[in-house]
Image (tube, rainbow, N blue to C red):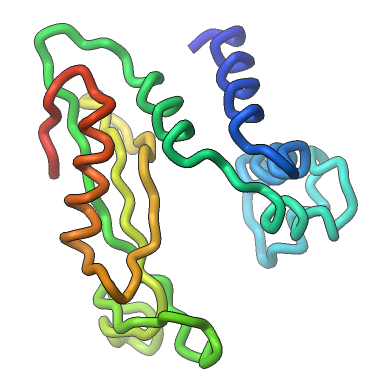
Length: 176
């Protein structure tokens, strides 16, 4: 990707973020360039975050990205590979929220041993569909990332997301 491609991508992304886009872009840059973060407020100390710490919360509260358009923007970054099928991978990640009794719609989540060695936790689950390049490395491009509500399960959510992504693809993917 050339510098011009990166600039165009950032501009396209900025336009999809809506209100709070400036603070959100600064927050994303801080997340990407800060090696180790101990707290959310610590991101405001990053040299690339040009605002004061309350703007961190503004970035999260005000931004309302056009999710389908954001997904299309990411899909357009997948290179055109002739005669090859791309690989999509689905992942379910639990987010333990054991002590957040007032948090709405918490569900039991199964995953790796999270807190106190127990693979079952109470909290939120998230489903991610990502494009996996066949080249070596650990890089992946997330295309769709959504919370799994109590009305869904990881498999039905992933199937829904894969259908949504496949509608935008030129070739039928291999799905893992």
